[in-house]
Image (tube, rainbow, N blue to C red; front, side, top):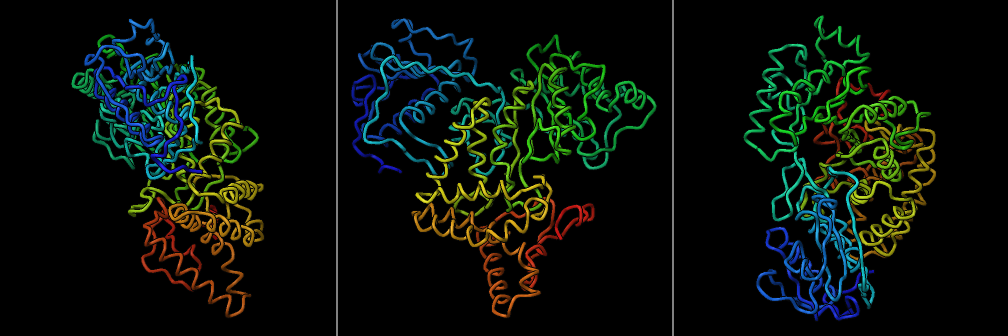
Length: 591
């Protein structure tokens, strides 16, 4: 699938060899990076090394690739509507022998360059350590090309695996990060000034695990307003300041708060009243500032009467919903109330973001089978008025040098697909499937169809179960279906590995670890109880090999459980996990 780099391909722009062009960029750090990236990838594509010039360095030439808002625009009659493009929209246009790649702002210009490389040259930016060129022997960028794109979501963050690295985040059009802001050379970012989550803990000095403030207390209001004013004064360009509740359900039970709970039909009423007062206090001085608060745990159900002010941003936080049946499925008992809450917040809120949990936070090395609802859930949220998405998945990954940041449960695939639908939340199934297939082929090699078959099997193997964040394997999959398919699954992996190159084989071996874990988890008791001595010895040996490989690769196993240091390999791998007191094994579907 991948051609050797620096091969002499036939690469033309509007019928002219790309080697006849030079790259001209507008003044700016981001524009310079965009020009340099374009030059480097063109050279990797066809061995043509294009020169880079600032637009003020040389007069116009017949064939130029123009990056950003250059001084050539007025001369050539090229006048994009940058107000309509916004900060992140971009335009790729061939105009009388010149190729314009420009954004409404610098970040949009950089996105435009990566989109050009991906869509018209054939590059695929799958992960930090897997970029491939899918082009054939001939690349032809057409005359009169016109490609204008404006993001549907103003805030996009895939909080998975190696997306903490700035280059990949920008290539995948992610405009923020929980790990900090993007530097100006990458176009800057949308960020939450003064803290990202549970900020009232620091503002008020309360305990995150046990305390919530009284939102009816004037002293609390005064302190929060003072904090917001101080942060806004220190950061005059701030777009969002977070005023978000602590991470517990211990809401205030004073008479004033309880009266509001009753009047509004939900505890969220007292929070929205409070945040509205904060927003009103700073609106005139900071008209472009949004005050963010959560709809999380006790505040998820919207109030019946009060409405958030226009300068209040609600961030709805999902929880233990069923990801296989999808949001909008009111027949699923785990999704009914969430669907209703999201729809109501979408009606009453002018600004609505969602914090969406997508990882398995107990058995982190085991995949959840929500491969296809990633698309449909994103579409549902967008159609209900959501304009920003933060997707929190297996962000722990591993810390080994090879494939840093990945786990064993398709985290790299999910992150790639999420970045695609975040840019285009109305994506149809056919395009989504094409993106999945391209990733599998590039990442896992010529035997990729075996892995696609396995993905489809996992979805089917859910059966009449639900796909929730804190489930054990017995709750996620139908045990008998999985066990019966083990010979077929092992053959799929063997066939894929046999057709992979060195890098792809290593990725497949990493992925295979979760399959071995599930096999041992599901079959251990029956082997130990009714298997012969040879079968029991083989299971013990495979258990030890699995543990050693997980340790060698530094695989992250659980956010909710402590992991034993020295497991007994004569017992099931489920005994690796020390279940916390607040989780009941029968509810967790562990045993």
